[in-house]
Image (cartoon, rainbow, N blue to C red; front, top):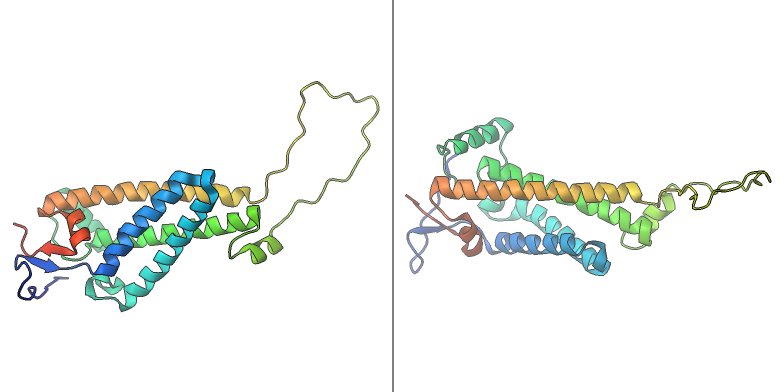
Length: 227
């Protein structure tokens, strides 16, 4: 699909075209900051981690809405492509022969969806973990009420002749929410992989199309013809 945009009005740089609206730019960099804070502080500063997670949740919700009601290049209908288009673009990009898109390319659009889905799963597992372990957060009343709790062991008198060895430890039951926490940590690490792929794609696309995509996400503008 070709992307054709009218030239900017008088007073603006006629060699550049407005692409990313203010919301998309603020969303992008706010999401970067919120995820980074949550990942770096971890459980060492739980309150900060939780509030950064809430920020991610709100940002995702707003971006989903904006994907349907926002301007052209922000809409999902503009950058969601089929698998063949995505793989074809990646193949052509690797050969530095990919077609240039003003908005998200097929691969860029696929990455946006992957990041949104991954962050949604990350937030969901985090909320469940927080509810089970700390009895806090919006899911506290629901999750703790339905969480499976291991039954208390029945007291059995030990045979008198049994002698415990020094230093022997009793088997410990898994802490409630352990599986959810492990899933949360796994998804967080998967997100790092996706972010790495995203950065690699940005660098490669910038080189292939002779434009600075990072700058474009700051200014909201792209060259009309980068060549």
